[in-house]
Amino acid sequence: MDAARLRRHDLVRVDPTAWTAILAARPDLAGLAPLPGWAASGWPLILRRRAPGEDRARVPLGLPLPPTLGKRRIGFALPPGILTPCPAPTLAETRAAAPPAWHSTLDALLALGARHGLVPCPFGGLLWQALTGLPYLTATSDLDLLWRVAGPLPNTFLGELAALAATAPMRLDGEILLPDGGGVQWREWQKAGTEAGNGDVLVKHRDRLEMRAVAGLSLASGAA
Image (cartoon, rainbow, N blue to C red):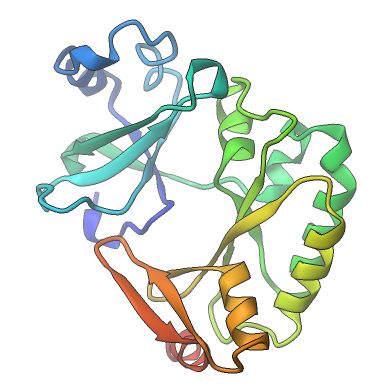
């Protein structure tokens, strides 16, 4: 696997044999019920931002546990040779795992994406509940979505998304993913664009953070 092509939020599966050895070397993870069978079940890990000082030859990954296990976020740094890319499910593919009270909002989000040629993908509790069947969602869960763009962000998209968020039964969070791999929290982008005209926003990459002007985001998106 070409680890250099991986970006934040990408999913990978771990070779089950290697997973057994990884857990054996992590006594801090002993007794956590879902972990021994995690890789054998085909459940993935998610690419996270690299921490300072981590080995750059290894892939920084995360595994979130459900609220019943304290919502612990477990970090790993694994060699790329034991990893296989895993396609990320879309919001449409995970809809059935969401609470019924969410469904009308999910349908509106899917329609919003279709109007603008964007495909939303979950990356928080809905993603993990759909993939594992474990109880990640609670009555206070957010809906975290990734909106990957291949060009300039449609002019009306953020306003329409904010209007949906204002009436949704859950908090809508998430990021716009730029072609260069950077992620921008959509609420920050909308606020910077509407209140400041051309404010700066934080762009998160796999290996760095940067501040970038809103106007530059559209230019960067169109250049890829």
